[in-house]
Image 1 (cartoon, helix red, strand yellow):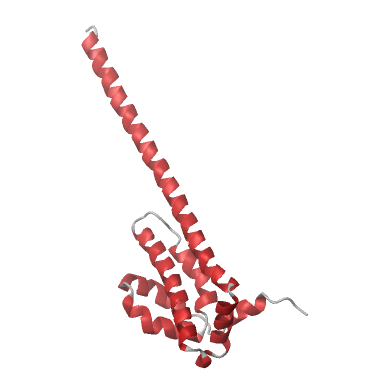
Image 2 (tube, helix red, strand yellow):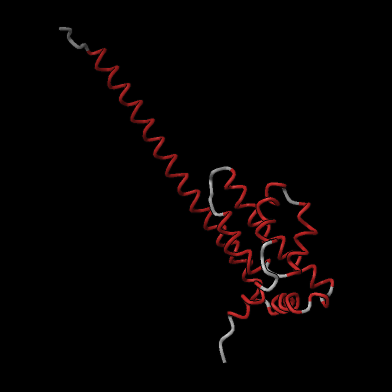
Length: 167
């Protein structure tokens, strides 16, 4: 039987320390990834909240309702305001979908299915999307177009009607 010398014990301690440090680094990386995902989710929520706050401005709310009820009567300034609003919505999904592609985030489909019907379920929004989608990445267009095109043209209007109290 062979006796274990100090050299062998030192090597074993060294290898154990290396393995332990690698496990620690792995756990730290996983924790950082969880924190990053939580922060990204929070940022998406804040971004959607800021988009929804546009409706607290009576001028924008009036423009939005006019778009639903009489889109042909929109002024150029009102159309420009709506263009900015819809570009913000697309940028939110583009950001979320890009993060999905990187494997960091998983909210792209949820954002599309949950929020897009109320904003893109009208003829103005569909026409806007058809006229502007050429400026966005092909992968994004392929993901968003089917969702927008299948929406009923009255979804946005019904969404607003559902928020009214019954007489």
